[in-house]
Image 1 (cartoon, rainbow, N blue to C red):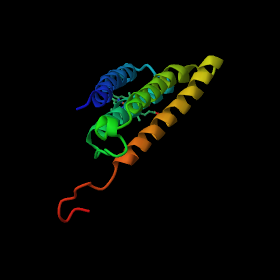
Image 2 (spheres, rainbow, N blue to C red):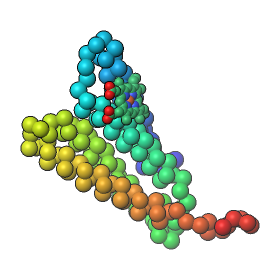
Image 3 (cartoon, helix red, strand yellow):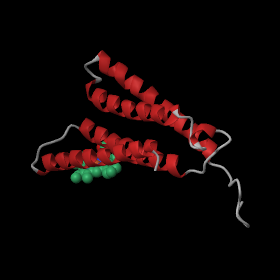
Length: 148
Ligand code: HEM
């Protein structure tokens, strides 16, 4: 598994642990009758879906999608070298910016700016990933008999 995939997968695993601990903390608070601010449930859900699920999917896709050697000759068909790290920084930087800023949007102009930036960063990350994945979702270069 290439280093870029390992970076995404290990980040996903860390996010899973934090998601579970965060969820357990909220459940424990509720179990003793204390209420949890609903914003923490929303940030927990973002960490779970973007931090765990999306990082895991991207990590495996970078590794397993068919190679496109004509398009990406320098990496034996995987991607342009700058692509995975750019996706990683936009996705996870955007996720952290969102988790830190969203609870404070009502009271802070900086938080509002950070939340807006996080939205743009995460959309750019996913568009770049889609471009990469699109170029590698292709028919086999030497299809076996009966395979289209
Ligand atoms: C990958 C695993 C998980 C995913 C995808 C996930 C997803 C979610 C989602 C979508 C919500 C609703 C957020 C909202 O209200 O907007 C939520 C809330 C919550 N989750 Fe998780 N969760 C995960 C793991 C856990 C675990 C392991 C625990 C507990 C040990 C947990 C405890 C909670 C609690 C207490 C809430 C708040 C419920 C409330 O509104 O009072 N979650 N989670």
